[in-house]
Image 1 (cartoon, one colour):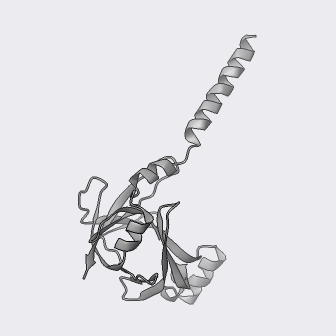
Image 2 (tube, helix red, strand yellow; image 1 turned 90 degrees about the horizontal axis):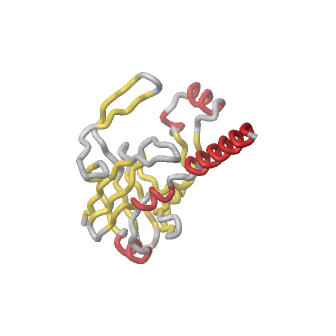
Image 3 (cartoon, one colour; image 1 turned 180 degrees about the horizontal axis):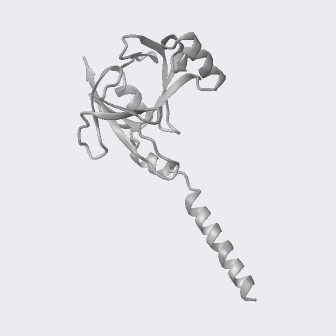
Length: 187
């Protein structure tokens, strides 16, 4: 009888542990997203947005970031992001740091609370034109080249002259680590 009780307790502990760890962080992420409505966002997103700074969730400015390449190479960089332009016609452009421009359409997904940019041309990560043919071939063979046609930004806050986008940091499904990319509207 004692074995049965022990077995039942072990099963209950396992079920309880699973139910606590199986919950994704969606609710936590949603708390960080703006509560502004679709009409407000679609009205205020129109314009040209220039990256101003990267901050912690507490508002402290981040002047340098450490980037790890592979397993061992680390470098420090000054945070920077592309400029963005959203038009009333729902067309949009991303002005990349390498001076290239991605064009497409934008829409706001109210259910997911995500600003979606749909590229006119399929994109690849890493960009094939930035790789040697040999390296590109290896990357494709290993499934390391990712093809995508849209990207989404989660808005933390938007006003008529400030746009703050959530910038996810590496985290698992049970936690949420992020910074905030602050943009200013340029007239």
